[in-house]
Image (cartoon, rainbow, N blue to C red):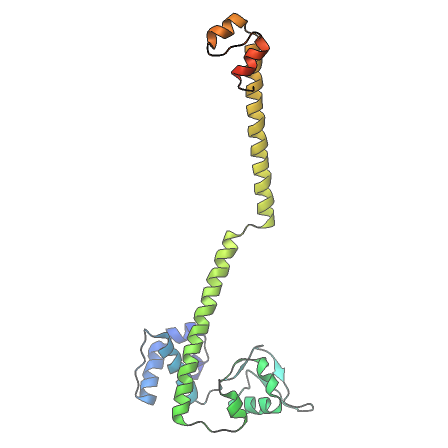
Length: 217
């Protein structure tokens, strides 16, 4: 059971039946399997029952000495609540080294006792906070993934601009060529033929006539 409780969320979910059974045997309570916060509360309660530490350093492989000259160190693999509390008593600012710790850690290092009712209330709050933090991280991860997929890399942007520039240049040249070709063709026609072809245009010279046909004037 300890191995399961030390596992990640995936391990917890895979062994939910075993945990729920043990939880019921130990507390007489049934866990609501569709309620994430109730599952989190069950896990925290079982860890408390099995006297598992609720402290965890941010750096998994880190080892710290409580005081200079100590022969022993404290790490996640050797962590106990007693060791963590003693470590924090020496210097409360060390709380920044921890990723996981009880919300009443300040009271613990002062030696203030916690009643069962207070413990249950704290575990319930910590369960809710754990679920909220998990949801927040999942939301941020999805947002980051979407932004990453939507954003253009510099290489992609350069390629797109180059392609757009090429297409724009190509399109502009094509239109100019078409106009010039039409100009050449019209300029070769006689004025009488132009007037017959374009009766709505009025001009006395071929050049002026062609310009008006091309709507350049």
